Every structure is written in C-alpha cells, then in structure tokens.
Image (cartoon, rainbow, N blue to C red; front, side):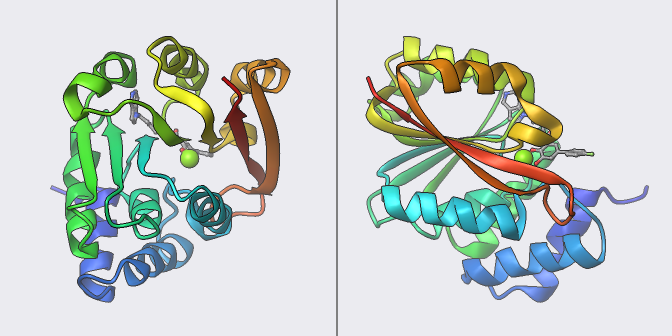
Length: 214
Ligand SMILES: O=C(NCCCCCn1ccc2cnccc21)c1cc(-c2ccc(F)cc2)cc(O)c1O
Ligand SMILES: [Mg+2]
C-alpha cells in the first residue's frame, strides 16, 4: 500500500541528514516540506523564533504537546543543557512511530521522553510519571481547541511556576481564538505575539509567548 507522508518525511531524513546531527535533520525536513510535500511542522521561519525563546529560557524541563514527526522536538532538544529533559506528547501512534525514528536519527533520544496519549489524560499524570515538579517551558502545537483547556489543567495541576513560559503555535492559522482571548486578558500572564507565517507558506501565522506570573 502507498506510504504515508510521515513515512516519506522520515525517508528524506534518512537519505539526506547525517546521523547524530540534529541541524541536518531539521534542514532535511525543511527541504522536503518546501520542495516535495507540505507538512505541519513549525517550520524554519517560526522555528527561528522557537529557537530564540528556548535559548533565552534555557529550560530544565520542557513539555511539548503535539510531536507529529519530531521536527520541533529535535529543534528544542538540540538547544537544551545536558541535564534537561523534554517530554513530548503525541496522540497518533503512527506519528509517534515516525517521530521516535527521527529523534533517534538526530541522536537526541536520551534527552527526550515521547509519551503517547491525549494531553487531557496525561497532564494530570506528569508529576507521578516523570518526577516533574513544574515545567519551565511548554510548547503547544496539538489540537487547537485543546490549548485553553490544557492550559487551565496545567494551572490546576500545579505544573506552572512563576516565570514558566507557554509558547503556542498557530494562534492565527488554524487559529486558537479562545486561548488568545483568555491568555491575553488574564492578569496571571504576560503575553507577546511574534508575527510570522504558516510553515512553508506566505499565509500569516504567529507564535504567542506567555509568561505565567503565578
Ligand atoms: O492541526 C495541527 N496540529 C495538531 C495535529 C494533531 C494533534 C493531535 N495531538 C497531538 C498530541 C495530542 C495530545 N492530546 C490530544 C491531541 C493531540 C496543525 C495544523 C496546521 C494546518 C493544517 C492545514 C492548514 F491548511 C493550515 C494549517 C498547521 C500546524 O502548524 C498545526 O500544528
Ligand atoms: Mg503547528
């Protein structure tokens, strides 16, 4: 049967990237998505904004909601200090299977925990499963109608501390209106919008960075 797009993306990584070289993995995926087949990775333009937020935060514990093929997982993990950990949540087992191989090709499997399931079920279990107290950085890139409920859930579970950073992809396209409304009007967050474009296109999109004030 015909291969899937994530399988073709993985093949492009294995063909064009160097094992153990995360930047070459990122480059191979961007080349594939720009010249062969579009895919919903955060991409190179928004990826540079992601890199700067991660580098500035220098987080010890990172949570990513929405792994897909592992593009942003590899981008983030390649910037983390030696003893830091990235926990990434993926709902779709097929995507998770591909992401594990992309992560392994990049040589970053020791920094990354990929866990399969729904964010609503897993967020309340983060402390017991991973011994995490709070997350220093959360990258939201999963179902757009889950950004708001999951943010409230993380608050309720005590997973955010004063200074924790939420970085949300796709706040314009596909859009997360209820999340934006909440986070921009909440006295508990200081938010900043980074205008950019939908990955590999000229369509407007952006990242919303919000600092939890406690
Ligand atoms: O839908 C998007 N991402 C989410 C994919 C599914 C996530 C499922 N999932 C993963 C973890 C997890 C945990 N709990 C519950 C569910 C969970 C997305 C879409 C577009 C896009 C598509 C078409 C178009 F025309 C324009 C834009 C662009 C993006 O950058 C995106 O990120
Ligand atoms: Mg996205």
